[in-house]
Image (cartoon, rainbow, N blue to C red; front, side, top):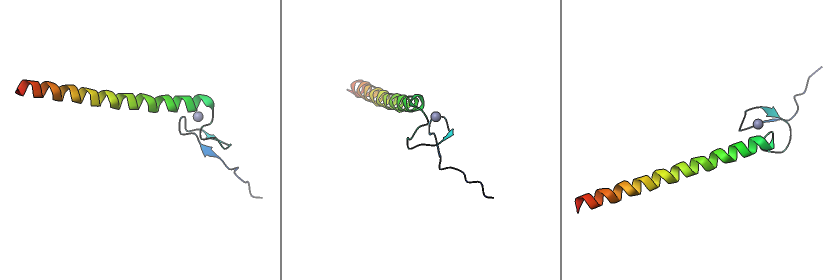
Length: 63
Ligand SMILES: [Zn+2]
C-alpha cells in the first residue's frame, strides 16, 4: 500500500506546510509578510534619504 502525500506547499511566512491554492497558510501570515516587505522598502528609502543628506552636507563643506 502506498501512502500518498497530498499536494501541499510551504508558507513563505511561517514555513508551515498547508494545502490550498493560496500563497500563505493564513491571512495573518500574508499580512505579516506584506508588512515586512513594506518595512524593508521604508528602510531602503530612509537609507537613500540619509545618503542624499550626507552628500549635500559634504558638498556644502567643500564650497
Ligand atoms: Zn503561515
